[in-house]
Length: 234
Image (cartoon, rainbow, N blue to C red; front, top):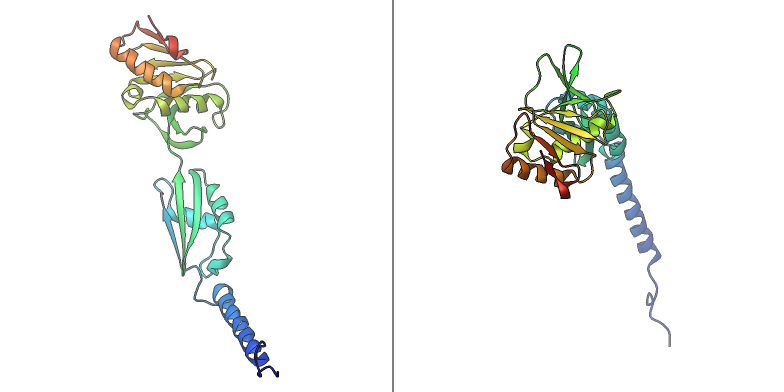
């Protein structure tokens, strides 16, 4: 029996037309993404900045307006902006059709240091956040040995400040971090806290809070939470 014409086979002209249509659509999409002036960077939205200026972040990105949005290397742009001293991390995302969104997490001060005749606020990496002639309030004064940036004593002291309950942190005047494994806290009234190393910081903070409630601090008081399971008060 003769098979009806076209049965079990496709029209070659129809297949060619569909192929050409797909190719044309792909060409249009590629042109829109990479070659047209429709989907280019027209706006850069910067969020999360306080000490940094939006203009400084935009300049550091290195992405001129008019750049096709699809061609922007968001990872490289974020890396360039993160080189700014006050930027801790940066994330860059495309927002179609014509916007780059830049989310900045700024470095935040954790400690104060004496610097020359004044004071310096630094973060956990020892990066300078701000300078002041008078001692800034609300930050423990830390003492260290060696360079400030990248100093392990700074990192250890900042971890203590991060883990202490707020009401306890408010009582801390200085943190001696000359030897990061044997930190010593001095409270505003002269009481001294032997902290030890940076291990079990959260637990030590909780134990110290209890000790301060049960044994109020004074100039003669000495606390030892270096081994929080067997904390000592003298």
